[in-house]
Length: 235
Ligand code: FE2
View (cartoon, rainbow, N blue to C red):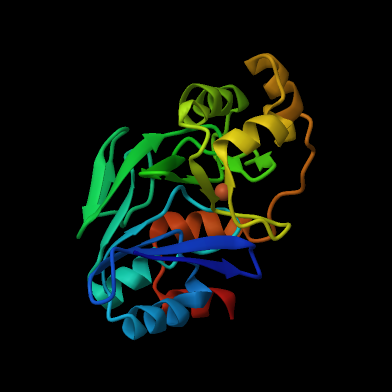
């Protein structure tokens, strides 16, 4: 099994390259456009054929490499059915299977951070996007975010998975790479609440600044930029 967790320093995004082995089909989750050459190099070195690329949600803090990866490799672009991206080939519903050679992911609709946020379960690993972070949760104050929805996505879906399940988030700002459901239930400060109302009270009082890239990244990710579009946009 090939499992690479790559980190984008600028946006603190984690990108995942997954395959059952050298020379086989691969998929990428949450790629960042600035790092496109690193992904293509890794795929080439491992003789992988990229067949699918997934964004967990429309990102506000970086521009996705989903469209450019598809342009260069002809891989299918996948998001959840609630995505407003104009370039998605396959929009999955809740509890749908996404398959590549010897690998299967199951989609989970987990709104709250945004109304298009999905998580993806791969056996004992879950890719949580910005729904569940390590020792945190994704903010809920823009892109139709909703703390009550997020509470239910967390407590009724993600945290119902076995305690041993490994969590792989879309971001980390403190160098954490993974954790487990069991550990997060005990130690994640956002999860120590008794009700959706208590959770919403915390989330509605975070008073965070908007991400620097937000005004550029959200429309760009809806439109689906190529690398050339990205260079022109950020010149
Ligand atoms: Fe996000």
